[in-house]
Image 1: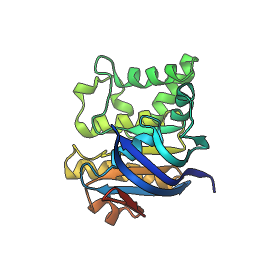
Image 2: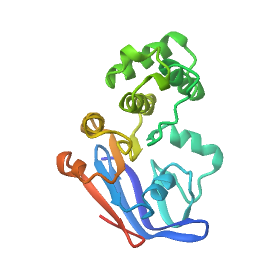
Image 3: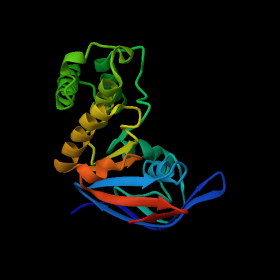
Length: 220
């Protein structure tokens, strides 16, 4: 199986403070992985190192074959095109429709055929059950609907891995379960999902590996 993440003796810093030390991770295709720990334990910091928003301070770190200790800034867009990133606060463009939000991403990643782009947007919206809301603006949608659009956005470029930072944190229990159903189905289809969460019910109900963040360490 393809190795997506390979970290050996990695140290992660924020503003010269050591956040995590001696991190050793090995991730392959199709895994469901939960990042568990208190606020400030390093979950988001680690996730940021996976897409180059935070540099790796030391150790050996490879993500999708990119050396994260040496990666050049101009290479980051190519890495990020192979990842789907889901933020807790959605980060949708509020001045345009759902469809336009997704078309914007396709244009930014090199798509140009308008007919193919529209067809692909419809396809990913169908995957997340939002095909009938393509004309809506984000503020016209519920939190759960906005998160579905964010997941659709993450799927646009057929990612090899999805990074989800507290994707159910702002949702009620029922809507959170719907989002978990969707993310778990994605992992079962062969796309690795890394998800940070404070909800310990999710790992119980949707089995996967657990990474425990505590005292500057990651226990596998």
